[in-house]
Length: 305
Image 1 (cartoon, rainbow, N blue to C red):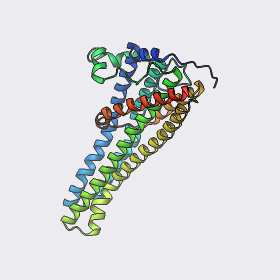
Image 2: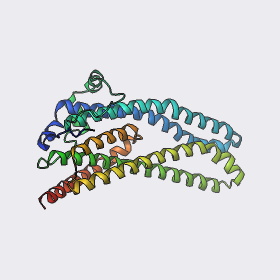
Image 3: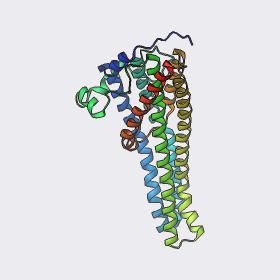
Image 4: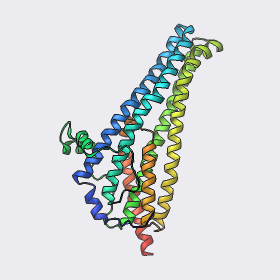
């Protein structure tokens, strides 16, 4: 990869991220992710209903274990094929639009082919209704997307933005992973407690309760493993970028390599439910701004040493 990229000034990037075309990309990616999460929600809702209803039915009608297990398995099959495919296709488009935003703000050349990027016409349709663009941008809090210090060099600013990207995603993934683990443990304890209360024998508990729910629990566990893997990838990249920023060793070729990796991570990232995103947004954004200021200060201190 040729070292031909020269970032714009931080002041210019600060301005470019709030321009209408840039904000339209942000709004489009938010809407695409929301559509993708509808399919995720359908998949999870089905498993949630099975996890809640199956034990109740099994307690009343133990012979239903095979039927409930078959229904659970069929729903997992649909979730991992049809629903997952639709979710993946739409979230890949969202990742492509988010990449378009970054490339525009950073004035970065396209690094490689981006698959499943929607056309400008599709983006226009996504962002036009309902409500005006300005109102939607205000409601979604899309202004000042990156915490940019206008006194930093362009290279430092892009690196800090990239580092904040990976760190922000890591935090969301970590929270979601904890939520899934908590739900698995909580529901397991509820079922065990309820079975003890009803004085079910071990055979009845295994055949009527655990076997019907096993596919659902395995699916949730695999889901959590995907989040942990994605979190570890971002943790590694966050530390790599931060080390170079703190030592003032970032060059433009690093930025291009990191941007390419960020796109791949976004494209393959498991979706975070909207409830988790909304709950953590204020906390994560405050932490992001503090971290960006610290990295900016550290970089300037090293520069003047």
